[in-house]
Amino acid sequence: MSGLYDLGGLAASLSETLAALRTDQLGEQPGAGSAPPAELTISAHPEHGDVSTNAALVASGKGGRPREFAAELGRRWLAGPGAGVCRSYEVAGPGFLNLFLAPDWYRGALQSMLDAGEDYGRGVLAAAARQRVNIEFVSVNPTGPLHVGHARYAAMGDALCRIFAFAGHDVTREFYINDYGTQMLKFGQSLAARCAQRLGIEMPVAEDGYQGEYLLEIADRLLAEAGDRWHAALAAAAPDVAAVPRAVVDELKSRGCDAVLALFRATLERLRVPFDVWKSEATLYDGPGEHRGFRGEVGKALAEMDAEDELRESEGAVWLCTTRYGDDKDRVLIRQTGEPTYFLSDIAYHRDKLDRGFDHLIDIWGADHHGYVPRMRAAFTALPPHDPDKLELIIGQLVNLMESGAAKRMSKRRGDIVTVDDLVEAIGVDATRFFMVGRSHDSTLDIDLDLAVEQSNKNPVYYVQYAHARIASILRNLSDDSHSASATVLPAYEAEPAERALLLALARFPLVISDAVERRGPHRLHNYLGELAAEFHVFYKQCRVLDDDAAVAAFRVGLCRAAKAVLASGLRLLGVSAPEQM
Image (cartoon, rainbow, N blue to C red; front, side, top):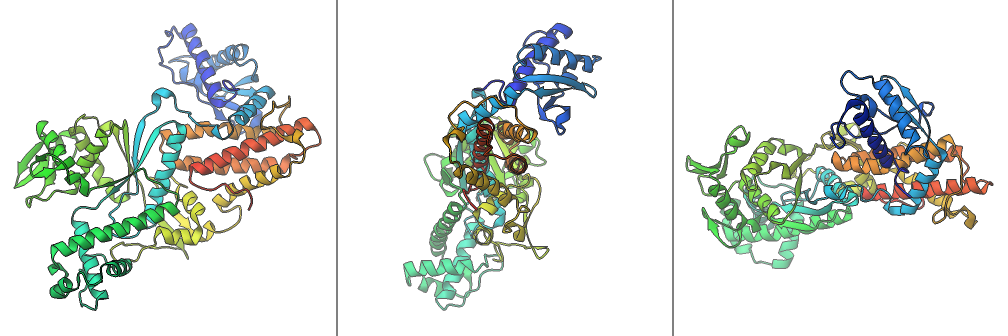
């Protein structure tokens, strides 16, 4: 059962009637598409209707009479496709159309939800809108443990991947390993100093190096594996870490990078964040062919930009002419020293993604990358196929952990960081995941650690999970098969106000999924789950589920099953568990 028995179907039906009305009254040709499709909102006050639309107000035309237009839309729709699902309508304000849905609509909507089960809301995207999407997130230098800022990008990126796939996109999750360049050299030298210290050799970490105690743990692990392998070289260079032979630094850098990546994988697995692809920046410089002294994807990217006459040489460096595409200045790709910039690596990396056949690329970056957006979009315009719209850059904002009224400050180099593992240990995976998507990515996020572990309705994740557990408890107490509504046809029944409110909230779920995809906003699903849990708790207080009347009980049990399924689906899409008991 589908069609008119969901809000999307109702809106589509109204849109068709509205198009015919515009043809009759405004002379618009069928299929002209000048009027936006009808959208429905849940009425805040049931006495003013169950759902409302401003479609007639928007589509009545310049100089029209929107109230009369709305009245005619209501009359035609109720006399036609809406006859079986709508009792009446009224026109309000300047031209809003309020609809009072019939008992059969509520019954049909619930039956559709039960028939769909855990697939309710899945595949909401039209076939033509589905794409192969690459979503890259978390990507950081493998120089130390992941901190709470990375947890936000991990939770948001993973939730976005889950929601995209649920809606119908073909999603690839990608982690870009920034294992090339100056920061990795500093990491290798910092690790060399820590190894020397463990071997009893005086060698301080450079002031601009990585000071964190975590490097001592990595040094212990490497020395346990290698023994005295680096002792002589480190002793000869002491106390100047810059004098350590490059071959030793490179070996320590490589082994240290592997150790940090192993930590990344363990942390992300604990956080329930999988990746399909781990792409190394260093590998972009390896491969066949050569151009301007560079091989692999980097050489190919340079060759393509040269062929398009997008590069220029000045002051001994090679520049990309990004000012042609809106950037405030041209950007260096190859320094006077012959060393590549990070920008060149990023261009080659995205070129590689395009070669892999994705329709759309999404990168989720940290707040410190905001100024990087114009140059990256300019580069994407310069790079064949010259389509900047294939690249979407999402800039996340900072996370503050609130403890005793103050926010903890973090610095990976100094080592005074709160890691993802620290946070998970303190508040758990579920709270970490749920709180991290509680606000839009473009807003700073404050997390109250005390609230996150509180077992009360004030804690948003506890509140939603408790609603699911409460429903599970109700269903476990079923003692009569006649109360089962999962595979049977629901009896005729006129829902009470609290039941209608819960059903309308459930009916919003597919629209919330569409909205979360369109706006790249997992926080919209997060907010919806809180609203849905609130509607269920009201229903639970006002309606006795296991009623003596079999028809009433069957409807309410069905409503419980549908609510449980939607809560479970929503929590799962956010990477949060749906407990059966609490």
